[in-house]
Amino acid sequence: MYLVLDTRDFKLFKNTTFSGHSKPQVRRAFQQAVALAQYDYAIHWAFELLCSGLVDTLWKLLFETYAQQIQRSNPLLAVYLQKRFEEFQPLRDAHAQDIPQIRNSNSARFIVAEAVALIVMSRKSKLPNMPSIKPEVDYAWERIQEMAVAPLRTYASAVLKTNDPPEIMMPANELAYSIREALETLLTLSTGSAGCSSGTRPPRRAEHLSSALNDQTITSIQNTSATLLGSSGTGLGLGLELGLGLGLGLGVPTRICNF
Image (cartoon, rainbow, N blue to C red; front, side):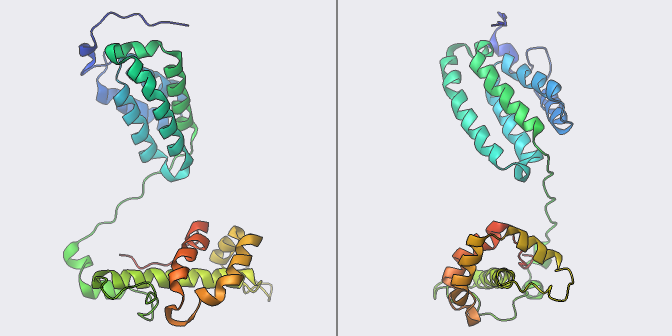
């Protein structure tokens, strides 16, 4: 095992790292290396923090980089990072009296190297831009009514209670309507009538839904369609629960108003 021998006091690494770099500089260099899929550079900057004993900064950087550059492209990586972080904590506690010496722990080195490798190799996905909201315009009641797509106000009547605040009634009704539309499309596909009898290609949305179906899903849709697709929201108490599983859980592109 290779050891890093350094007698400098840990307080020297408060603002600079093991090799004299500033922490913001290391952070930027690491994130750039991840974005360019440069594992060797990424592992170099990660171990720069580990050798400095800045393990809290290191793990914060790993989680932030995942959230900023990967997130939905590899959702299971978040579970993995959390598990590895929990495995790392006993090692941190064992070196609490002299935290820089954790750099000489093979277990700590392996955990960090593996976490960095998976972050670098994961497919990247930029965070969507947040919409620009002008409260005085976008939250005006007239504007909200313009964005609503449900033709009736009764789609969520089965799940709304008497004492529910009126502010949630329209959003709940729009969500119920969107789930109802998705289930109707799924039911149509499950019965084999996706509109292709004339030899024409189905709409892109229908193709997407068809690829998500399997025999078990089709059976569930057929067995519950009478309840889920009852008129004017009948049965939507069950429909909201099962609809989220059958519709949204399969990646169905539902049409919810743009609140």
